[in-house]
Image (cartoon, rainbow, N blue to C red; front, side):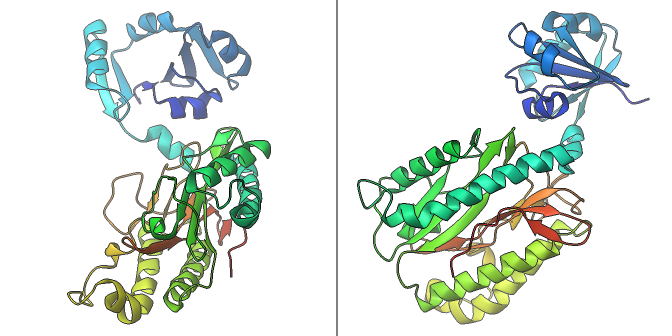
Length: 360
């Protein structure tokens, strides 16, 4: 018989109960679901918790724990100090570490989860549609800074119905685009800059994630070549993202395509300098995985990488899993580009849920 399980991870609690809390514990014991909530959340939990959940005061956990000889806990969420307190208070209970039980349940999304993600993606698309106007016509003072544009993106997202941003909005101008997770600065937009926007919002707790590149002048031949190739890879790997395909397959296909096209003709001659060789790894330029799972957290579940990773970040895509596809190329201190969509995995093909126009 499977031992009872203590749920302490707040995102997992949100998933199981439907309630957002800053503290709480759930005990899963057979078919019983017991939620122990302090007085701040008791009334809310009793009204809003999903069907089949029994809400109890936080202090009631002690009596239930005394009856348990063995109990599993979320090893990646519990600190050494907290585990020591449990062992001291419940000397008759054996605590067994477990990992990724609820996280694995979260990977395949239910219809209501997909609806929330779709709505978040629609809001994101509407914001992205306004970016060209904001770059040159919609902001004061002009020209905008990375910070001011990020602020307007977040303001517009809230006005369009987002509950909050899914992560800190990335706005990068010019050479700052070479840093995938650049934080907006006071840098002003200059004519000819590449602009990288990476943003997402939350609706009912669920995230969207989208990246687009905007040109404010005529791109160079090299920039156009990279941009066109990233568009191709984003389109093809989105189509390939069907249930049963492994994360390694997608990431490897993207890297091989980049390597065949760019390493011989562009990367060696332009960015590796005289000391560069054709054997130098593409990882110098494609700095991250092809994508990642998305849901209640902006990074959850599977990681689309060909590197060795631990469960549940490895293996095959699942039907109704939501992921990102985000190929990117970055030249240190010069420029970079990333195209990203939120994608729904189906039995036959991946479907982009973010559909903001990609600049020609």
